[in-house]
Length: 115
Length: 115
Image 1: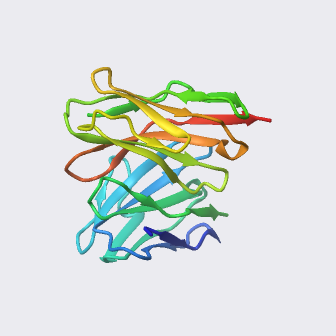
Image 2: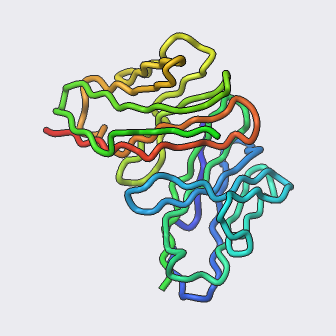
């Protein structure tokens, strides 16, 4: 149980275009979802926290207009990287929580390459 | 604000031997959760073990156990009978008992298992 999927697993896009990453909780309802960014050989950096039906809460230094987060249902959150640039290339990971028990369940991640 | 420190960037262990990864944290809260996550080369985050701060008993999961010292704010992970599949990045994480449910991650320890 507690499976989280991400789609796509790898995406290549051209500079200036937008790309959307989906995060789904497959067998549970997630009251809260999180989006992380991870650079090679580094820890996970929290970008934002989203609750179903509410606006996302962004961490300091994260551009909310560049990284649009939507949490439209209890099983789906999306991250849209707008006007992507090569410096946005990274590994993006989502996680989901029911709020109970403290644990986050992680998706497999999405590798974004901007050319 | 809470912080999590992993002071060992890299550790090595012989197969079948025991290794301990250290984690310290700083908080003024009395109730919280602590976690150890494993991130293998696939980059999928896998929960290894969790500890509730109000529980005095150290958590164990098969070959994995923790030494939780609340007063010292220390949360080390012991891996017994190390296996080649244990090679990965290990992250320690802190979560408040209430609030936003977000994690605070340490910088990680890369574990190498030598055959």
